[in-house]
Structure formats: structure tokens, C-alpha cells
Length: 90
Image 1 (cartoon, rainbow, N blue to C red):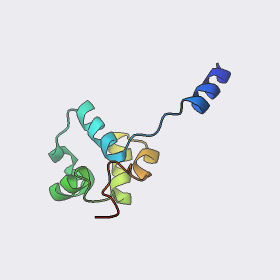
Image 2: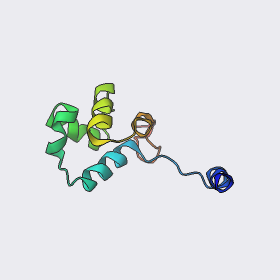
Image 3: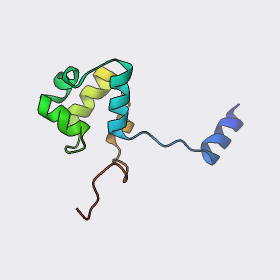
């Protein structure tokens, strides 16, 4: 079994999900609305800005997401994917 896992990990790696997509997925799983994230993010405006890609996650937000929603820190700490984040030329 370990040999198969090693082969699959090498030949067919699975990338981590985008941090915002991971948050949206967890919201969907838990039937959460944006207002339910206010205690995690600190304000309604911050929730909206993060989910719309206009604000980066702070360390406090990441800690709260890990502790309260169980999203792995390695997912939240990574850079957003190029297709999802604003281009450098803007």
C-alpha cells in the first residue's frame, strides 16, 4: 500500500485548494453565511473583502479559521493561485 501511495503522490500530485475556495467550501459544508464569519474575521466588511479577494488573510484570521472551522493552516498560508489573484500589471 505504501508503494502505491508513493507512486500516486509522485505521478499524480494533488495541489492544495485556493485559501478562499477552501473557506467558501467550508461555508457551504456548514451552511454558513457571511455574517456567520464575522466573529472569525472581526467585521462584516473584512469578511466581504477577504471573500472577494481584496484583503489578505491576517495571522489572527488564519488562527481563527483553523480553530473554529478546521481548515488546515497549510491551505490558508499559501499564496493565492495566479488565476484567482489580481495580476501584477493592474
